[in-house]
Length: 250
Ligand SMILES: C[S@@+](CC[C@H](N)C(=O)[O-])C[C@H]1O[C@@H](n2cnc3c(N)ncnc32)[C@H](O)[C@@H]1O
Image (cartoon, rainbow, N blue to C red; front, top):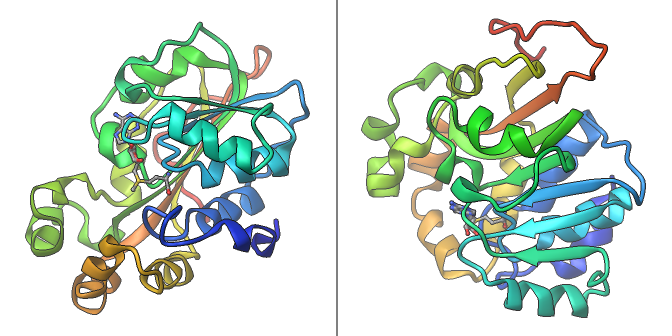
């Protein structure tokens, strides 16, 4: 995927953190979503919808763009302006209580938001898995702790993140948290390559939260944190490969 195709949409107004389009590009490059216009994808915690735009353009599938803090009305106006109003449906629902029917989605994508609501055991199985089709793919990119600092988020990140520090977990911790299920074929987690570029493209904006992050980049963010990639593949009805808790991305 060529992220230059989306440069015109990126600004301090539409971005809400490290460049979500760059994070998504790395996920798509490693794990392409092979869907067509019949496919349905959930973009969970889509913010102002930058990733929803890219998902729609790159896959051709229909997209549900869900976010809690940004209203469906605001995102709907943006999607109409961007010419994707027919393909992307904005909704404003809590990830803990999604209103969908079972077995709808071919894929779920979540960039820089999963850590806000999914950091406890059983979340994926109880709150998201029921809405996914057999054989579906889940792609997640979130800020987290480097593996060597597993379990030390509060000690190392509180000066920057205050009470939210606990949300930052390492790739190893996320793999354990997502866990197993009869319907899960495999779970892979890894430290993403896009960390430096995604952060610098955010810190270069005039967004007031980027100004705050800038103060901590050299002392806390770069030394202790990473971007965590998470790939989950669900079984197809005739696949019998077990979910393997020790499996890691190499
Ligand atoms: C840092 S922003 C990232 C937004 C966007 N994905 C991006 O990268 O630009 C985190 C997003 O997570 C969403 N979020 C937090 N808790 C949520 C929940 N319980 N359900 C749905 N979305 C949630 C917020 O609404 C917010 O827009």
